[in-house]
Length: 319
Image (spheres, rainbow, N blue to C red):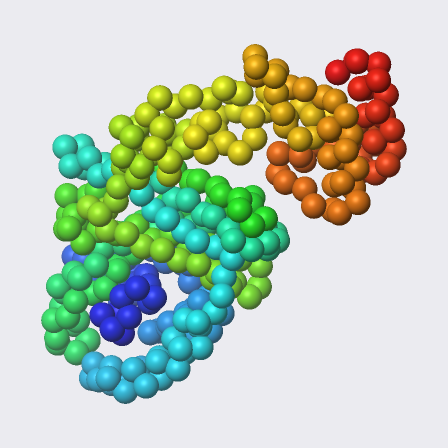
């Protein structure tokens, strides 16, 4: 099934220490126990689908073909589900140092609560030709877990459409691994019960792009990672480059609702801001740059009282 659905089916294979030969490095006892405890794993083989559905057991003598008919309906029940999350993985594999630096970016196109939402990052090795002692056969072990980098989960703070959050780190590539088959898998999963998986992405460490916008600035140092901006200008110093910064924080100050500026780049607070604020209150239509600059009197609510205070500012020239 992994070969049949390479773009939409991702697995991580955990090997029980109780059934792993002493000379093998497949088992990760403490991480195996921690991940297994999340799902109450008892009998094996155990498969956990999307964090919420499981199967236990199989067919004797390595006759796994009948399991296809059991697995396919489960796969089909999840593959079309919508999700507010998208995950991209980029980074750089330094072959001289055998070290991988990665950037996992989670973005949202719909609102969803971030309560108990976590990001987990795994390192796996695919297609390990290995001997299956129980049935006396060789086979390819798929996406064998090599590390669970974030074994307590990283808190996902974003909850609104358009927001993004990046997670960065690094790990060493063991000389015992085939680096051509090492992959990073990133997952958005809820840590409450049921432990729903909302998104997953995988990438081979040799296929990552360390400079996605080709501006000569590596992703981790680029203040507009997806927008070409080799000069990295950031006029308001907020860490977001001008090339992708919707809001110039020097201009969008309290009262300058429409965000205009004079020839020197200084904000202008005038009657047009009064009219804009009145329109916003009447229509409810706003934009992200206006957030935080409309509550003129500082009481936490944006209403007609703020219009009155803004009128006083304009009349008295106190902006």
